[in-house]
Image 1 (cartoon, rainbow, N blue to C red):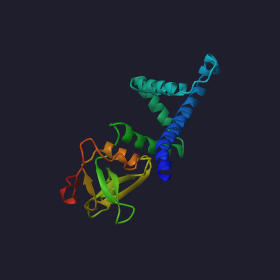
Image 2: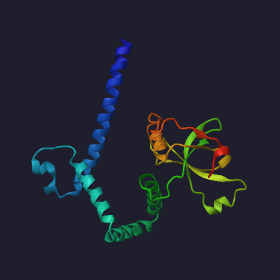
Image 3: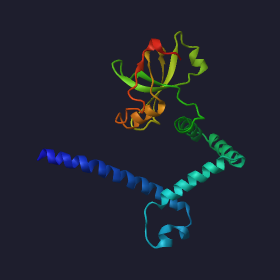
Image 4: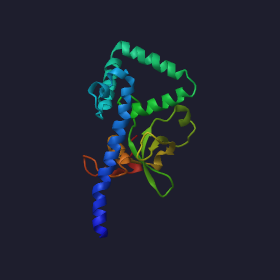
Amino acid sequence: MKKYFVTGLLVWVPFGITLWVLNLTIGTMDKTLLLLPAAWHPDRLLGIHIPGWGIILTLLIVGLTGVLVRNMLGQQLLRYWEGLLLHIPFVNSIYKGVKQVSDTLLSGSGNSFRKVLLVRYPHPEAWSLAFQTSVPGEVIDRFDEEYVAVFIPTTPSPVNGFYFFVRKADTIALGMSVDVALRSIVSMGVAAASENGKQRAITPDQQSN
């Protein structure tokens, strides 16, 4: 009886969680319809409620924003808007931090991660995936040995994590791409396999950068 119950759970748990995530996502995006005048709401125009209209509106807003920012006028408006946010105490710190992370994860123009490393965290007997970033010049001058800056993301949200300076000799450089490492972190290791097959770690003596 137990094996039948477990088999049933294996069918319904992924299905139920998928429906829950979809319902939460659609419900959240449908709230963007509040941006429209009440007379323009699809529910009022059609007379029935059809979930998902918010997704279409969200995609249109994001797409039109991208088109606008791609031209000179849009870039000037964006700089003006960012200037306002950066002059608001506390808000400027949050905005700058979130923008730097989003630039790194979503675009190739930001201060992107250089490579994927293994570092000893959270204790000397454990290893964690980390991304090598840039070390401020003033910090470099404080060390007698070569140190690297690493960002250790949390699972399953890679936008949160820890920023450390560690000895380069205590890290292991990996051949996997940043995208593969991010997928592994987000999926908690389920999607660890990369398209290029199994990756081989590079020993500290083989590191070039």
